[in-house]
Length: 131
Image (cartoon, rainbow, N blue to C red; front, side, top):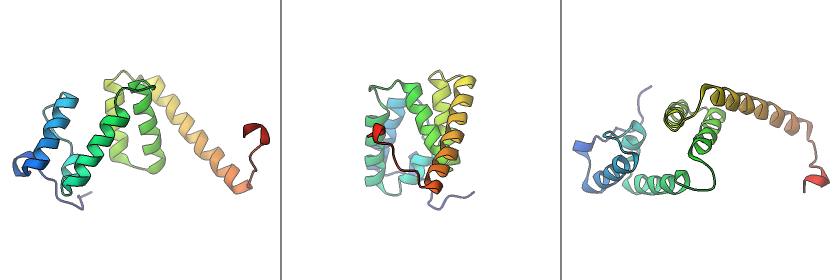
């Protein structure tokens, strides 16, 4: 699949984009920028906003890092985003996700999607005890 937006390499990036790239690399302790950021760099304001949101939401919080990545992968599977599945699966593995955790998460995703469709199709009302 070819990109619908050109990928902005570090050498070709504006100072504003390079500043975000530098922060991404420093925060993630890496020496490269992945294609998502390179494509998003076509709109520097969005690049800056999304990176800020990711640092906030995916950073330290009540959920541990592996759980956050598993949730991200689960949503990406449901939304059919192969890039995000690959990216966040790699991140989850780097943070300690096991093969068993990945398999169990996929089983839950499959089950939730199936039962969600059944409930929606059947028009099941929410039980009062759940309110």
